[in-house]
Length: 333
Ligand code: NAD
Image 1 (cartoon, protein in one colour):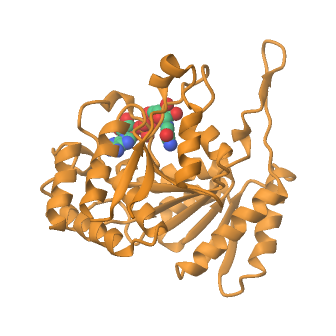
Image 2: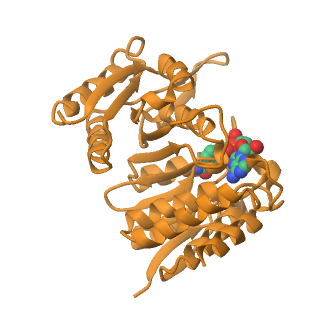
């Protein structure tokens, strides 16, 4: 029986990178029926919303989705589709590995991090209002339930993947109650995992440490906003957004997507790096238990990176999105 997986092409560069990833995953030999559902800007005119109900229904039914990035207008317009999707499906854990790849030159070596970001609350509740004409207020919500859940997820992941340390990142010196609660939960969960080292950093100090000695860190556990920011920083440590995959995982469903956004200025140019989405597909295959197919793709990706012949502009090459995918498919044969 083939798997049925929801495929969301997304906005901007989304359709081209998602198509590249789909071709690579299909070439790895796992039978998949892709259920393509459109979300994003184009749906506003057609359906009156960037996130039609059938998108949520499709993911709820299939339980797994591969997703391209979706645009969120800045300062006005509709609420973030990404945030809504994560909240509606209760995809509480955002997992973003950042690891040096052979052939991808960066300023750093020995980086092998997994960022675990709480994905459902914090300032992403979108609860904000104006106070008169000259002030605005956003409400940050941190709950014990969500903090315990994400802390347990981080420690379980650390144990499962043979990781040595979990670092909780916070700003509890200033937000003593909200970040204080997040930290209290992380500490409580850490007590049950004596085999895994636990430490804490204030987010600003963490950023400095990550650009000085990233090799010293392993699994990072963060509330939503810091996780969002720090994961782009970590993508920068290992070659940029073009190589940074991600997963949003819940009890009932999982959505795999690159860390990067819709990069509108590159839309339709067949230019950007498909690797972040392809590697998100590898995370998806591993989640499905399809280890052979996942490792086939990983080996082919490493070969293409080492050969340096079919790389996109961000990795110093001149290949297009589809050429890089073709090279990965050829390397699998
Ligand atoms: P972005 O991540 O889309 O792009 C920033 C820059 O990073 C690009 O201009 C490009 O230079 C580089 N880049 C991104 N992806 C790349 C790739 N695959 N290969 C090579 N280079 C790449 O960030 P942005 O411009 O701030 O955001 C654009 C839109 O995407 C916004 O509307 C934002 O809300 C949205 N967004 C969506 C998601 C998501 O769907 N999960 C995530 C982040 C941002």
